[in-house]
Length: 429
Ligand code: PA5
Image (cartoon, rainbow, N blue to C red; front, side):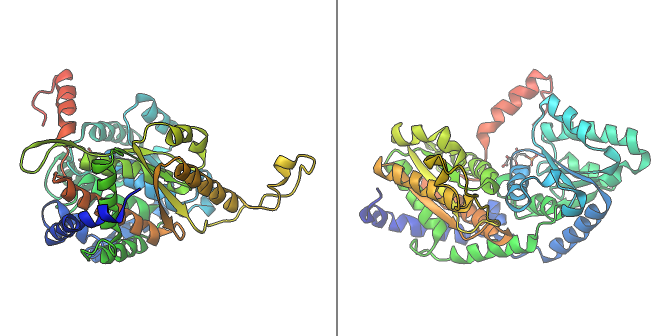
């Protein structure tokens, strides 16, 4: 539904947005743009520690939340076996993997039921080094570790945090934890390509160099201000037109691959926390932001598709299609007496899932519902690096087009302060 004329009218704004982002590369909160290039030493260090973790521990537990958890979860789901933790040790490329990104009391208790503390490594990830959820988990885990393993407890902890700010770095220095730093200019939701994402990924056997190469390859494509050649810029412009000019203020991220299920979660945070703002950069009022929603194909065809096809004209559906899955599942012939079942025999789940995706795309089209498809040739560390960097760059450009600060999150502060006040901690920032 977007016309060439609409695109042409955005030409100048697109050029300006790309040039503004590029001009500030590596400065302020755009430190993440250099991550594909400036981490050679740190990557070698991470690989050494990961090797030690894989040889020493049976469980690897990330304690973190938001930007300090969603990337590690998404990458693990995308690149490791879909039943990774249930694999026998000999078939798993690293320790069992858990990300505890909530403080539901039952969750921590459940974790303690399934891990052996003396064989567990805890990776505490916090940029601010003071997030209440993460630090409460730190307190629980360290007390339990001290009771179980005694003097060696600190050897079970890896800290990933700012090099000077916050309490976690102080604790890391005091106790001699293995520590990796989150570089300046890298906010939580843009941190997957720094130790926040690289440490957990490497510890679970993921090729982090390939991820960074993929990110670099996408970055190269984003170095032009020609929106027809820069995929992130074109995507930002299309979403801007869809949301700001055509009222499509919801974007549904709909991967057709279980491996990408949590990429949709990761994207939702990136898009929501970056673009949902009530002030432009000059201080004037707005209320910007397209609401991201997550879904999974084909599962949610049987749950949400009815709404997408017949509900309000307020959505853009973003399919992610995988061209080549890492395995082929054949559907055997059988049930010949039932025509509606028998037709499936001899096909594969690979053809079936793509046929269903195309069927859904067609249905949206005939119902005049905006949709687009991102095609991944296959899901691997390189293409995942490309995809994540594409979406990060898109978000940065979208912030420019909307003229908002895409890198802060003032809207989450009130609830934090209120929580602290309820708990009697009025000094907390
Ligand atoms: O993207 C963000 O900045 C947030 O989601 C943070 O990552 C989240 O609040 C956790 O913060 P921290 O890493 O400081 O513990």
